[in-house]
Image 1 (cartoon, each protein chain N blue to C red):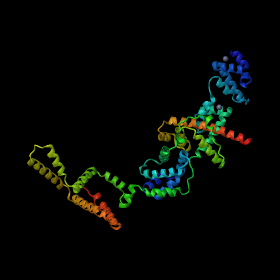
Image 2 (cartoon, chains in turn green, yellow):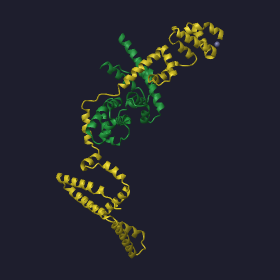
Image 3 (spheres, each protein chain N blue to C red):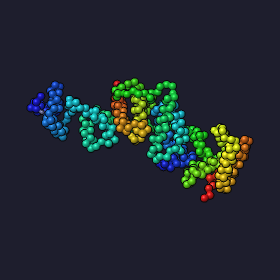
Length: 190
Length: 278
Ligand SMILES: [Zn+2]
Ligand SMILES: [Zn+2]
């Protein structure tokens, strides 16, 4: 968003229009995080994220570049709280290390929706096979596009680890998905 | 296998036309023999230059023979390659591998697709009334700071910063706190008296009385040194706050507004403008 610095300042001074603009600019990303982590109930979580943001905005005095990492940290913590409170053990918090060969196992081929929606559904199912740290890294670095240093700060891990983990996870995903699309082409060819 | 034998079959070796056993022997030989390795790589290069088609995976099989895995190394570099973060030599070497390796080519393509697909997960369009819902809820949870600001018309945050810049603010604040305490609760003689009486049971009541008088005259002397303007303002304050507390009990909407105004005026006119005379 342009003029993010000034918009944040205006929000801090109680400007309702600025607050509306800020929600509008970032609601998509917050929903993206909430859906990635929770799948259902993501709207409730997204609302909670913005209420927390509103309450804490007065404490934000850093530069505009650090706003997105800060907001995504609020969003991630909010979703983690909800996962911990939910009674069923969620897939997100698994600690299984996967191999490319096994990622495609058990993935259900989506039959509804456009091709694009089906690809997204496949991708979510494949990512679900990773452990939580890899999911966090994929979310913050490769999906939301935060800088490696920012991801390292949010997850409290060394930048080198973030980089190598992200590379390995992406290679595994790429291989799994290419196997999957090959399989799909063969299957539809018959 | 010796060097002579190797040289007689090197062309076939490069073309991948040897039997599995012979191929393995050749691979073992160049892993150990520097001069044959140089010859082999020069030949491979010249053959590449002449666009002689090599069997796919041929150099990979040699590398495996000597215990290296080019695909593993190439995979590790692919992400950096796509982000243009490799140095020129690494880029050149990786490109060279990608030319011949179908597997790594496929991985590269699906990695590029994956990057685009991951980016597409960043945002999900929310329900159309989401902004309204959030606005409605955030108006209810207006921060305490801005409620105060709206009620009193004073920006406390700005005021605090302004106050902190005053050179003698800590002294003034301590002084104000003392005066406030005494105007509400009086001078704490009772506490002093009972503490002394307990601690010194052998002292005669006359001596204790004397000490209390000393203490009170000291306090009085202290009070006398307070500038007149300030003590008047604090008398005003204690009157205002007492009547505020009394009025609150049965305050209707109207006198609440009037009260708020009077307190606002009082705040902005008196307490934050006083200064201790030099
Ligand atoms: Zn030799
Ligand atoms: Zn390869």
